[in-house]
Length: 65
Image 1 (cartoon, rainbow, N blue to C red):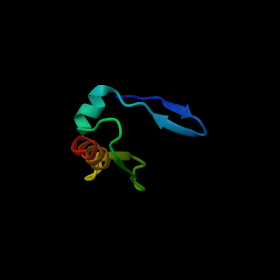
Image 2 (cartoon, helix red, strand yellow):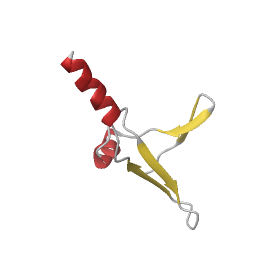
Image 3 (cartoon, rainbow, N blue to C red):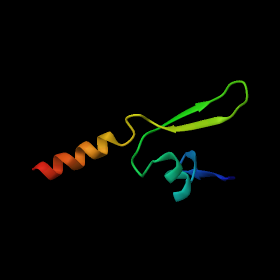
Image 4 (cartoon, helix red, strand yellow):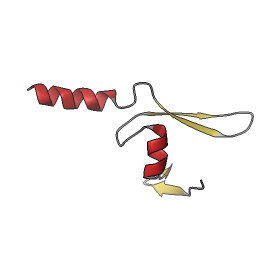
């Protein structure tokens, strides 16, 4: 899947499609781990094991108040 590198303020980013996020089991607010292979230059993106825990804890906290 090809994606275009976009300018976002003073930074750059890649827009993820819903299909890509579904494959990562990720959603808005989740943390992603990004690695760049020194040997091949490939970018590897994985959902962080703590992915969206902060957001979910926040939602649980709101629900319990």
